[in-house]
View 1 (cartoon, rainbow, N blue to C red):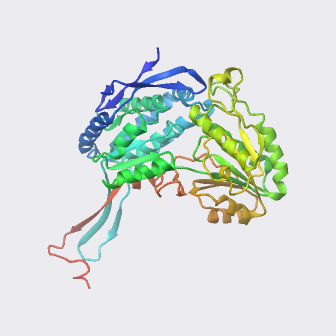
View 2 (cartoon, rainbow, N blue to C red):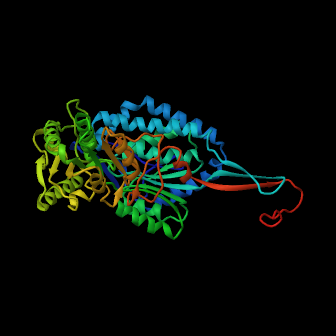
View 3 (cartoon, rainbow, N blue to C red):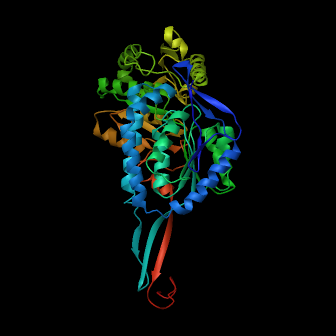
Length: 495
């Protein structure tokens, strides 16, 4: 019988007051139930928020270096349990074991970075314009953070959000994706084992319609961090407006890799295979478009199709598997719909294009890695996010044309260019409209100590990762100390 997990509210593991449950299943073998979870309601969210609000009053007073000590312990526990977590992640969301190990490692890196940030939550001191007066700006925590995360990085993304929030002195109500609740529960168990006080982290399982909306609309939640679709991000912005919540959104992407005629083609080939079909294309930074210089278009396309056709689909726990399944039936259906759209638009299907359902693959939600050539820049498959193993290949006349094609999307998350021309590399850094640009590397592979996020409709301007995320989870407070012994009026008594 599958293990049953519960919500964590105020340090206690409890079922939902609804009494309902849902299952998490293995997308490579849908007959396998990974675990069951409470299908929670607004009432459960109310309890979690109440616990987080009470815990905040004590947690905000714990010195940040002491909060960092707990983060270090979390990192140590993640190291000790890395392989177990990686294997369970592959069972629950499907990507191959080498990738899930990397997902856990990102959580480890984020924990250790947060630990050091406990001694580095820098403020500023500046000279006052008046004599015998001291001026400074300091960071203070905000309150209760609502954390809503997706299924594709069930360890990395929750740690990106929760660790900085908690290190900064906030408390958390966490709603993980319904496709990957087990990894979320295991992460929270580790956080509690490391010594977090009761109520500092609370987890409420369930769907976005009930649990997610209850968090974003709750009047006692002070800030929201969400990663997911642009449509839901817009709704969260509306829901949060009435209470003027601070909101961080990391949304869609339609990322492109440019390959110039002077590029190392073998290197560029490795980059696009990793970028387009790693995580079965289910990354917000996935390479969804490939822009090839006209002079190498035919040669590179031939190389790409040959290598793509050799990729092996299968259960991500098997060492023979290169590409795992889509996360669920709905996601695979979306991929199939976009393949149909590409054919109807007149693009040429040169690799894949079908669900993979032979033998053991019939047990899961597998889809062949798929490539369209002769894609024009206004086709839907060149502009809309697919979130699956589908790559659109476009032709560019020169560098300027390639950048114009790359920027022709409402998103702006990640980008890549392969070139040996240093001038074009620097122009690409300047002219590409994206939050991340890689030179001679794939569009995926963000590191935990740098800002992560995009421009245009990819988000609302905040960043995750690195030092910048701490600006989101803290308020700036200006502090003046006047030791002159008299009233001094700024802008009046000194001019």
